[in-house]
Length: 306
Image (cartoon, rainbow, N blue to C red):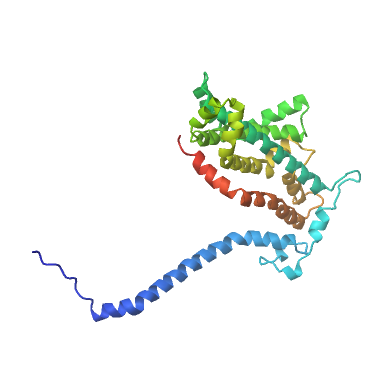
C-alpha cells in the first residue's frame, strides 16, 4: 500500500499571518474595490446632478451652479419661462410645448409604423419562400453599411421638389424607412426560433396566415417588438441634423435646445436649455425603465441563429 503524503504543518509565522494579516488584506481589498466603484459612479452622475441643479436653479449663469443639488434653493422659474414663452402672439402653445408635441408625434408615429412593418417583413422572411429572398436580405444588409447622412442632400431635394418640407408626418416616414432593414434582421432572428409546428397546427384548425401571425407569432414575439419599439422611439427623439434640414420652420425639441443655447440667438438662456433637456429626458427614461426586460431579452434572443 502506498503511503499517504502528509502535508507539512504550517509554521508559527504562517499561522500568525493567516490569523491576523489575511483578514486585514481582504478588508483592504474590499475597501479599495468599493472606493473605485463609488468614484466612477460619482464621475458618471456628476453631469446629471449638475444638469438637475441647473434646471432648478434661480441663477442665470452656469458657472454659479453647484454640482451637488440643493433642494432648499430650487426654483421653478426656468420651467415657468419655457412653458409660457411664445415667440409670436398668434401661437396657440408656447414654443417649447409645440416643439415637444411635434417631437412626440414624430417619435410615436414612426415607432408604431416601424413595429408593424418590421414585424410583417420579418414574418414574411421567416415563414415564406419567394424568389430573390436572399438577394433582398443581402441588399438590406449592404445598405446598412452606409451612414444615413449620405442621403440628406437627396432627401432635401426630394422634399423640396414635392413640397414636403416642414411636414412632421413625412419626416416620420424617413425614420421608418431607415429603421426597417436593421429591425427586420432582429425580428427575423427572433421569429426563426418560434417552432413552425405552431403554424401548422393552427393551419389545420383553419387559421389563415394573418390569424397565425396575430394570434400566435405576435404574442410570442412581444419581447423583440418591445426592443424594436425602444430603438425606433429613441432615433427621432434627440435627432437634430435631419429635422434642421427637412423641417427648418417647424422646430423639434433638439432644434429648440440648440437655438436657445446659441450665444448669437435671442434669447440666449443656458439655464432654460438645462431645464428643457432635463424634461426631455424624462419620457425616454421612463420608456427605458419600463421596456428594459424586453430590450435585454429581445436583443439576445434576436441575435441567435435559428
